[in-house]
View (tube, helix red, strand yellow):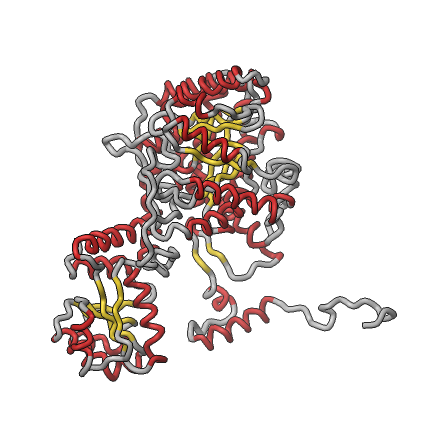
Length: 636
């Protein structure tokens, strides 16, 4: 194109594509891959993904999937941001959590964080954390008019709040310039412990502290609406949101009945949500949360200025793994990014070793630097609502908000959050959700990198000093077990790996499986890799001959391996020719169990009769397969 020629749009020579054309291309790909012969909309549906809460993610979104007008950032319904400027001026609040019980050690880590990019600190105080009278030493040297302090004190929130307010006054800085959250959360405490003996008294104490903050320290919020207990009990995104709405409404009732206006009551609440490595779901959850709370505030009579939800996002403990914890750095990076893009006011990236105990200085440095890179190098905070306008994000936000509102209505219909917790309604709902998710984890439909997929058995374990209290869990559960449980995605696999560890400690080696590779390399490589990945997820080492085996050589090879179980690995065609004879030879050689990598197909009866005990394939119940394999080998 010359300087004299007119400018032409790059797409001018191409006709506009429509949805039907795209569907026809999808049909061709699916047909060639052998997935389905579906056409049109059915072909598109074949690529859809089902999420929790009845949400179905489609492979393509267009302007037809757009939602109603969302307004502007800083204006109701606050989907796009809680403030007109979003986080563009100073970024979001980088909030680090500290769990030391020793005030001196806590002070060292707090100062190190504040000197290296952290802008506020979140302290575990009281039962399982810092002693209340140790707060002054832990915050020695901290400029309380510059760095916000957030407390998680469980049942000790009243004395902890009083002590922090005293320190604000003693610091000499104007109390009106203080910022933070005192962390009163009676309903969160009920959810965690099941103990409601002091719920009324705790609610009254929280209301008194909120009134004092309103009068003397407007930058300090008295109550935390903590949704983490519901997320950590296995709840879905919509259940987490619905429970937080019900809790927030309960606190509004308590505060307004104690004399605060609706606007002042709204300003006393800070909402806390989990951020996961599911990037889009986290973004949509935070946007939906602001929309939902704006609706609640509107119905309660709050002014638009007081209706914006203050959000604190925390990277999920459920997604953190104890094996291969280094991968947690990647998970928390994605989660932190999602929280920032979703519009959270404050973000806590938990250190990668938080699931193992007290994080060390290196882990805390990586956690805070993760946020520094997102803010300073990626400039993530310089755009208000960067995901806004995405037809997928807008649609997901809308669907999630509707599902959350439905659960909120169920809780309100059951008498409110306290009644729903006492009756077990919330616990039962979350348990059903976790049961369904556990099935996906067991079948590896939801993979866990480094645990259920690509485990590294030879990697030395990472040890940390035991944490005095679980993250976000200020008080222990009652003896009756009335509190909500705490779950992790890696729970089932961790139990398997612990059995393997015990076997290694007792016998000097891990349990082993012999991989019987049949036929040429091209025929068996894929299923050898699959089987190795599967068995290692349970802590079972794989042993394989350098050359393929057959019915004549497999017995000797199996004996050399020292293994007690075996798995045949090859293509379906080779199985048809050799599997039955090899399986019979393995059983004669003393194999306690023989697996076959692949679906049985038409040869099931033949293979079973020859000695194949089970078939392992993509989508099988990996946890059951691995557990039964360890049982056969009598691994404790």
